[in-house]
Length: 137
Image (tube, rainbow, N blue to C red; front, side, top):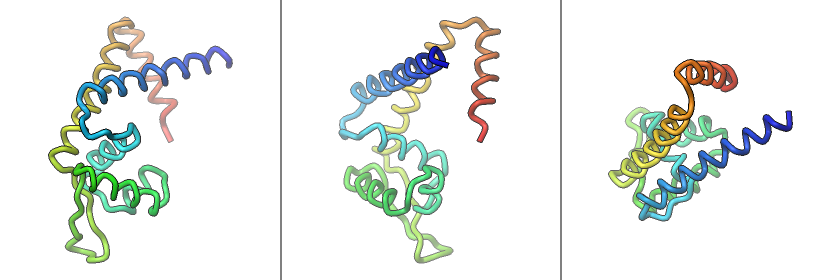
């Protein structure tokens, strides 16, 4: 089990390093990795409201609200009041938010390329299958 923990730590560091490098290369907004993950999740969910976003992130609504407000201040997202429920607002990415999200996607592609370049086709297929099995909730 100790060797598995070392592998996970190494993988986590590799991913963190790749995201930090991409952040340094593209990011002029001084966003944290957490804020970049918020933008990624907002994009993934397709303009969610706070309730949907907090459920996906597994965080409380007040915590998500504070973070979204900071992203609004940084010009990365904006809210539009829902047509169906006037008490709810949907969160949308601004052009800046979309650009940061593209940069974050770029970091993920670079990580995938690094893994692909180090493994054979068979190893890659096996890794994808095993990781998919581990990630099932």
